[in-house]
Length: 127
Image (cartoon, rainbow, N blue to C red):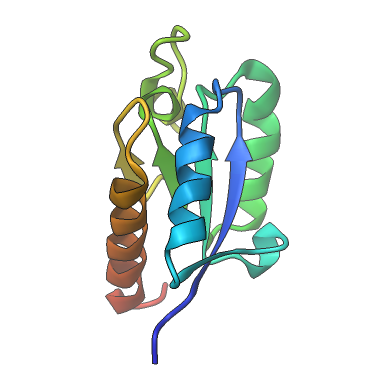
C-alpha cells in the first residue's frame, strides 16, 4: 500500500515560481495530495520570504500545530533572497524539518524532498 502524503501550502510573499513548481509536483505525483486544512495535513509547505505581515500568523499556526512538519521550499523561503532578508533562517522560534534551496527547485526535486523528509519523520519515535 502506498502512503499518500497530504500537503497544505502557504505563500508568505513569494513571486509564485515555487508555488507553480509545487503545483506541478503534486499534480504529477500519485503519492502527493492537497489537504483541505492544516489540521488534515501531513506537512506544511512554506514558500516566500516570510514578509512581516505573515510572521505572527505563521508562528501562531506552527505553535498550535506543533507536530505539523514545516517544509521550506525555495531560496526565498530560506533566507529571503532575492527579496531581501527574511525567510525561515531569520525566525529563531520556527522549527523547520526541510530547507529545499532553488529558485525555484524542480517539481521532481520538490516531490523527492517531501517524500524523503516525511518518510524519515515517520521512522522517528513520537515525542
